[in-house]
Amino acid sequence: MTVSNRLFAVSRFCLPTLAACAVATSGMAPVAAQAATLPDKTIVFCSEGSPAGFDTAQYTTSIEFSAGSYTVYNRLIEFVHGSTDIEPGLAEKWDVSPDGLTYTFHLRPGVKFQTTSFFKPTRDFNADDVVFTYQRMLDPEQPFRKAYAVPFPYFNDLGLAKNIAKIEKVDPYTVRFTLKEVDAPFLQQIAMPFASILSAEYADQLLKAGKASDINQYPVGTGPFIFRSYTKDDTIRFDGNPDYWKPGVVKVSKLIFAITVDPAVRLQKLKRGECQVMSYPRPADIPAVKTEASLAMPSQVGFNLGYIAYNTTKKPLDNVLVRRALDMSINKKAIIESVYQGAGQAATNPMPPTQWGYDKNLKDAPYDTEKAKALLKQAGYPDGFDLTLWAMPVQRPYNPNARLMAEMLQADWAKIGVKVKIGTYEWGEYIRRAHSGEHEAMLIGWTGDYGDPDNWLGVLLGCDAVNGSNFSKWCYKPYDDLIKKGRGTTDMAERTKAYTQAQEIFKDQVPFTPIAHSTVYQPISKNIEGFKIDPFGPTQFMNVGLK
Image (tube, rainbow, N blue to C red):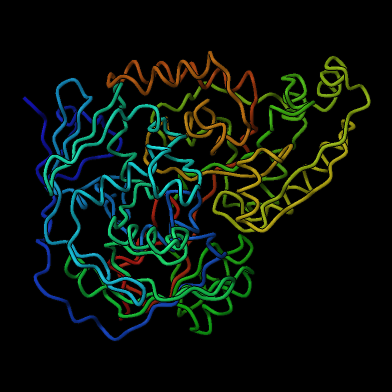
């Protein structure tokens, strides 16, 4: 007997053995039989940065996810708009075998790939597209992957590259995944942006033309918006998709991303009506925005974490005594007051307190510069050392002012003899170099992707993720064994126990210093309707229209 999903929305905080979850029916509309007539309206989004590309399997930040995953693409399973629940996507139902190792997805018929100036599909979405999408990430010898060799950090960070034994096309509308070991959050993982389904037909066209890399600059999917053009550091233009398989979701004919790095300029554009939605206001501007008659300011507690990653493969940061000294010499209270200005709370753990499995008993080491000096002396650095600290060039929900934070850390660490040089790069380059491990210490952060402790403890700190989002490059077997134990069982008590022990090891070894969890504020025009803050960070325009 298998456990089936029959058009259910399932809480992403429950177990993927669906019988253990509380489920509620979610009536999904049938695929549209003909193209819809879209309202002749345009939404302009003042976004904070340029995406490195649109092939979201190779990225880990919300800039790419906003511009690619949630505009152009869909996934087998989707997160409910503005929610942490999952619902059917390109798979209209699925079955899970009793042993939790086989997932059979029954695909939605009649879904059309987008027609663009550079690709005209000859068939609807089917199993070939699912197999191509995943085999490309799974098989190093897959032809398209060999032609366009890029990393797949999320796929590897989550352990899927090692755990997926095979992917089979059962028939044109059925695909079967076989895992080597139980992966408790598997369904939630494949609802993430990296798992966006690509067109195998388009990939074949690019491969034959010798232009495989174009998949990163000219995206084609089944999603609510069709890519039209991209001018780096300026504009991304999309058209509403009249053939979108969810009727009524696309409420405008045009969507424009006006890339505006300066938050003060973004706000001025919003006030003047040049855009209707903007990303990430400065904390100091929030009170004034709330008084603007033409604007609204939805907000919610952020499912996020800002932190300082120490590259544990480089001296002297490979020494736990040095990391402890840096950690306890940070005036976290002052940073939160100055950088977050009332919109943040101190972070202690490697995940937020709203995440199940959070260990409430963990405490920060006391702020103590004298003890920190003693630890440095014990580690063999009585006179301190030189350190390069990278500060992010963009504003993120988990860090509204990285440069100011870096300067405050520079002053804090100078008190224990650590001389800090602050550096940065353009955002795409910043992430690329960090994945390669070029940094010593860096400011970075995370917004949760699928509501499971593994998303924090595994993706940010596991051995599988050292070439991906584990920017500390920390691979510690006692810790990693606990992460794998938590991932490999569906027993909630056992998972919680494993993750609690892992957090205790984290606090002892200090691969990174948690700084803060922030509140997310989203300024929008009062003419906007249907907008919801995405708990995972990206900005989405499904169901969003203009009055």
